[in-house]
Length: 219
Image (cartoon, rainbow, N blue to C red; front, side, top):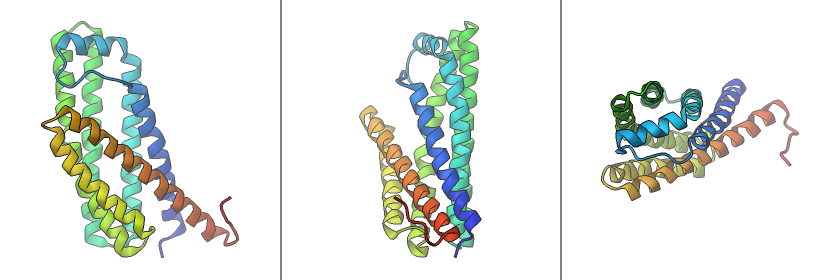
């Protein structure tokens, strides 16, 4: 039986991570494509510099909370080796996220100083690094989903749904390398994951509350 503190940590990090990652996307709004011209990228970075910097902070902290939630859930399953695999691959998400954030912050600096070519290069580089996310996400999503199904840490349906989302993330991410339309669809897959994470966080929050107060029943 997972400890109450671990359950509460997983719940809090899941819910807070979703809030920050959704805010990160809302702050950015509609952006030019990764292959946009240097002039277009520079103009966007210049006119949205505050939003880009705010988004970088939200994305960074949101990604950290996401990995902490994954760590807590994987540990709750009681699987030693696969817990380590899941957490290490999820850690790649933090590294990639911070790389993209750092590149975009550098791009904002280049754009505001008038270095159009540098800003365009940073924009393209950030888009290229972003293509690696689906691979890393697919590995830890499917692994964590299988662990959750086997351990019944969460309702079995949630474990199976996470496995499905992981598979879709890999397929959609691969297709997005060749099609802009597939990239838009793959973005919806990540939205589905955020919805999953929110539901999982709420389920864990209710369980931790019940552990402290057996008479508790959500309205």
